[in-house]
Length: 476
Image (cartoon, rainbow, N blue to C red; front, side):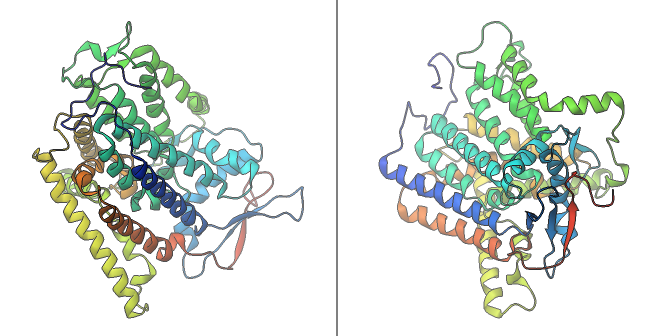
């Protein structure tokens, strides 16, 4: 949909009317897409969870989890087992469950959306990697939404920089390369960004009643309002970090910078909440223990918890905008005590380069906050969206029942990359600059893929049956 001239657009110092990507840039864009796809599929193929069907008896299909030598399989596959258990039940004709998995904070991931997304592909191919097809497609659509939004608001140069940082980010590739909830949250995040860009008014009007229109919708606001509600209603069914999206929307809507069309928004909520029906039924029947009090650990108490969490949240904001994936590098085999000297040298070198990019990102963010990035006006949509996201990350970290981790803020990845993309905008016009960034991103991802425990090649080991043909645990 092309924005109408009647609808106010995001003010920007580099706002084009309708720029198109040149043929040379189009070929480079295609190359970036292919590199990202190859890396993500390669990581999935190296996933350490080896799940397959036994075909000896057509009446009895059992699923096995093969152990990996040198590592405790329980500590590395717990999330995957908890996600696959209801999914396998669904694939074998079981009912939709009220929740898909328990969260680390003691509550549950409501709805049956995750069970459907993982279980339905198992009907076609009884292999845990069947869900990877859906995840790759979701990430591909998310990348397209990020690129299309950036091109419509800031122009093709900014769009190329933002898309390259997003699509080849080691954060996205690592978290999207195996089966767990954060792999699914990327699409609602990108859809949320796109919808708010189309609902942007650019005029702060605090608590103005016009943010919720029931009569005449803003030009082109119907479908964005619908998809915004769809993103907000499905995200909590994928990962608990969806609270960040709610805080962002609340900040933009209350300040009047975005306005939605009420009927379309309600329609999106209805459609996105359809998979919550089993949850509502279970809640009415009182058949589910919604909170596990034994699993609500926090770090620190009172103001000390705030002093610990807020700097940690800001640190993750900086690192998500860089190549620094933190302990994922240190957990690779290159850093093992028995690794050869050249292996440790390579690992330390890559980790050092990633740390340097984090320091550069920190400097860029300070320049952005001071209004010194000429490409990104402080009142533009992307700048305000990123600033609101930063506030949402800090608030969620302060009130969260668990200590903030990297996967808790993956939902903010597009916003974390806004300032670095604006800084790189004029520096990626040459192939040399693009190749340097591409080489750094690919190198960091390869280091994780070849050496991290999650991506070690499965080796023959002891196997144990987890599910039977009835979709139950053996002996239950």
